[in-house]
Length: 309
Image 1: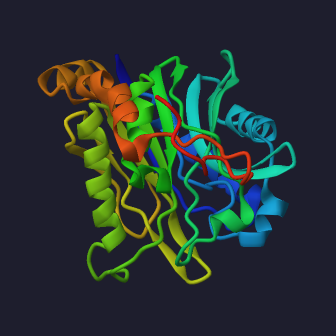
Image 2: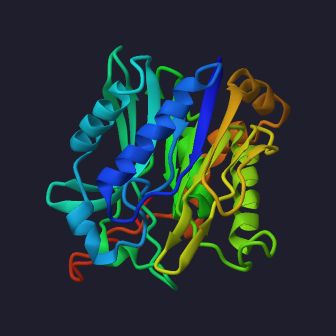
């Protein structure tokens, strides 16, 4: 199956949801004008508000239902053709706040929320303070869409190889990575920042090891003196980069992926099949992977002796 995909390297207006929704509508309008018409558009992590809100996340967080309704309203001003959208936002759910990603189908034909992913790995070091302001999600799962089986990772999750493994073992053929990665190592006009170079390695490895397509959407712009350099990219199931966004500006990348290539790549290098065969054996027999049984005396889950496998 061929999928026409658009990656929005996006610059939100920090803390101004209405202005950002207008910009999102403008991007959706640009997407609707592309031929062939993209079936999926991917926005970055926290695209709705900007990333470095800290205590402001409480004021800007909204439910997935509310965001879905706002996106439907905006897209109705652009087109009634079906389109899938993945977008990062601060989510309010059950009186808790998460760094989340909404995957929804918009348009006149069966608009619906398909999946909500909540970020599991929360960086709290250096300039990052996520554990102070948001809760960790419960897990990573692939999900069925009209375009195929997809998984979403949010930024730091892609730095942990187990995230891609879990997604691929759950059947994902396309992994969307929504990121807000601050630039490090180079100023504008002074070459490729170190974080962009590292993301290139991460995206290639994530795709090649698991035989999946990977699309990385990066935030752009500046927030409080911190720059987001962009450099969004896409990778084939063999780990080759097939698209790259510019540095230091917003952009819209249009490309086509063919899920038949997932089948052929996995046949040529059956790394995922090896993982499927060895996964449980590794969990059972590798000391570092065993799950510890709770010690009722400590009240700390996993503090006691190892459970029998």
